[in-house]
Image (tube, rainbow, N blue to C red; front, top):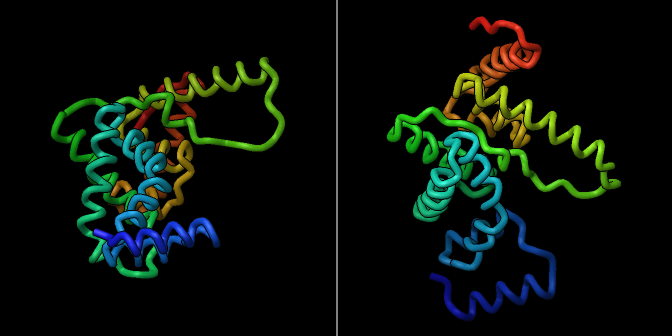
Length: 202
């Protein structure tokens, strides 16, 4: 646990200067500054939840997986190597937690519309017609994804709906990057066929 003086210094830096970068936050959290870890949670909680949702399919499972992921990340923070990117490490833990829930429940997962609700700012607001068309296209895409194989669904959702890199997708799914690339290529081919109303052949 961080001391009161340490937390005061942290707050003063946030008020008087630039926000702490990721490496600084990790170093402070590793030294026991709980406020620094809280800042890490604040920065990544939405992405970690949406990543877990893409894998687990159910919001309740995703919420539990995200919470447990941060608990495990906090416990393992002392073993995290300074200078390494934090985001893939967190997503790997979240992916493991989400997959564990899917396996233990033995459920067929389905995506929720919330997966695609990444905040996008800037630019002119779309017209009502354009917004309606976009919503319809998004609905068609999710319907097609929900009818897809769970592995196809997860890799497409992580890579394109959440805009994770190939490396982050691989970390989340616990797969080599080459496997992710080949799986993604096949999954996209099957999804295109499904959207075009053609028979899908594995």
